[in-house]
Image (cartoon, rainbow, N blue to C red; front, side, top):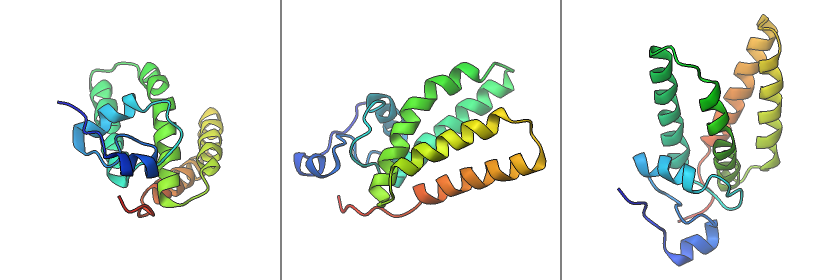
Length: 138
């Protein structure tokens, strides 16, 4: 499988050569674009990567393997994808960084009911923003 590279006109507007890829290509583009905090990404890219991450986490859980290393490998590319997704949706992108730091801080706390509720709220806000329609017309 190869990644489809977008046309020069779309690349110039989005600063993402894999803008609009789908399915497994979106997961491959996550790693190819792992340090690209510029530009935009589509909802489809974001949600295919989320689905793949869920699948890997469930598989590792089934075999009772540690998720710690996977979380560290996944963090930076996922953060860059989230920042690009915020830009594509027209949302102030530093909010993605603030939510990630806040979520990391909440996960360090003991799991009391208020902490669980705040964690769910932060994740819900992030998913809601990443579900907004694209402002760019590719």
